[in-house]
Length: 593
Image (cartoon, rainbow, N blue to C red; front, top):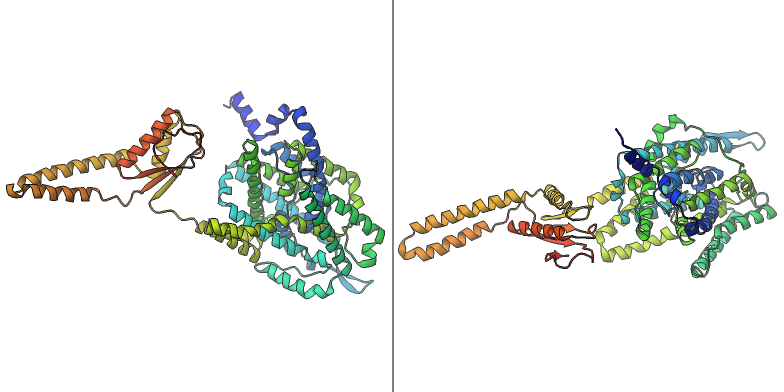
């Protein structure tokens, strides 16, 4: 039977908002969270609309994806600082699915007025929204299932070089996917391996058909966005909040487009109708699940890996803990419920998170307030942006990918520090570029696993707990179990062998002739010592104790380490200590790496 305190503890860990919101300090946090929420909400507007283009759905669904999932994460998330919502890598993966299952060719119709075939955009977009919702819903189910079975450790297989190489490769996919909006052309969609290469070749072939008006809008937008972002960086410490460059960009572009009639006069493609209000919940189309199951699993792993990596960075900075399994459940609920409200899969954005933290955001109240900003936009303001050129949204995407493109500088750094990590980074980039992001991720993980080799004769042991009187014995038992070394048995065998050697030595010495007794004893002793000193090839030569979690050692802990060192020395195994805290007592006379 579940006791009251245990039930309460389970409830608070499963729904973190119940533990921190009642203790929320208005005096300490309210102003910072308010400013941060408004700032991040302003960023959600252009990013949500832009990343909807990547997902190949109408821009308004990017706004939905910047509203519902945020509220769910506010309730169930364990990170205080990350800003969840639309994310470029996730969006381009969604776009690959929607365009594969609902390509333009499936919605061609004949226009009697022009005597030409054209795409039924309304029917196509409706189907693509269904596909996006289905894959998002299923990816959320995967995340919840992984969280419930305590599978949060899966992120350990996503090393930093792999994640950075993967996001760089995915960023290249994002850039290529937006070239059609930059040049105002309509390349065919390619799928499968080398699809990106084929797309680039076709874009080059279609460049002579570029819409000059669209290209001018793109170039002016990119130059303007980059200049103001650089100004933000230069004046970073002097400005209370960053200049909302993306918001200013879409406002100016919308006004110019409306005044000049860019669509009618110059053929510049615009966002089009943005319906006001919220969509009613709709259960995803279950018949699509079988076609998107692989994509959904890839989305669940990528989205979780990015969110937990960023969450841990800020948790370490501000001294709190992010529960990896709870993050899986929180993201899973965000995507599952979001899929019901026709959102596409979300994760954590580095740019929004940095703004949320730098403008004073201290809790997820800032994220909830940013969602309220999006709600106001969807209810009353969204329709004002119907004349916004899609080229401007593509420009926003390009500029936001600057950080990912700078990750190419990892290569010379890794070359100097760790060539294996550099190999993983480069291989991940190549695999992701040549294949789709989902297949590229699987291939990259497989490749990185091949680079992990066991060091012969060396055992590395790490316990997640500190070492003190209450668990000293368990620490020794765990070390023996993981290393496979039964010290008591080995020492006993060594003592028996030593006793046998001494008996043999005495027996042979007695039989030796008197005149050669001294030489015989010396010969027997030398041979016996040599035989006894041969190391057991099945045992490791050294054991490394990785002590980064150990921030305190009492006298029992010190004695335990000395005892472990002494016992292993008896069987000729050297004990080393790694990553010791500066607060540990200097009296531990062991080898410290």
